Length: 288
Image (cartoon, rainbow, N blue to C red):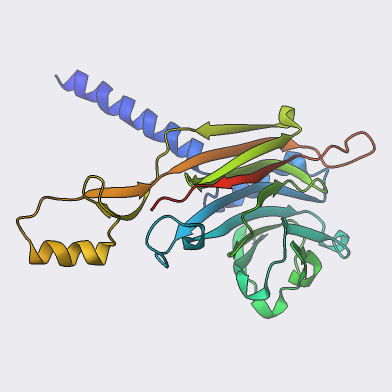
């Protein structure tokens, strides 16, 4: 009995270890983290990981799943390595490239943090927003790395959010000015939006489509074929009529797309092909 329990515990421990290794993308930075990427030091700047998520956030301005009720947002997190700080004086790192015009108020940098090793210890520096210089032109945003006053062998975390993005075209462009170890995208698209997507250079990346239509958003309640009721109206009705049967919850479900690219070489004389994915909006079918 004890022997069986021992092997059961051992199997659970192994499974947990494997799962932790697979999901530990933005793991806590340690001294050996700098050594981990030393084999890529032929490039002055390289992207360790780029992780983004497109999400349609629901608000009940109107009763039902209408286009006006959804705000398209992008959350994006970069982790960069800068080997030689003196070589980035003219380097503008692209944060975002899309379609349409992005308002200043819709772009928010959560934080930019740099890490260095001094006396064999990690030194963390939260960079003040006053020292962050970025260039925004229409739908393109670039970051002036030189404005961050970085040291040699720095690792930088950059996290930002853009809201009120145009829905006609959702784009994901990989920066080919530096070596990319890993880039990931998740796009959760409500069922009312009919998108067609085009993948440029499919040999270099993978797109996985989850057709289970999960991650639903509750938009109201309905009795059989009755009109859609808001949550407030339904709660008030149930309070007045406690014996009334439960109504059916009406959801607007999402289709999820996952995009993954690994070990992408920068542009040179031989490599000029773009790696990107475009979602083009074809139609909108509201739920009411």
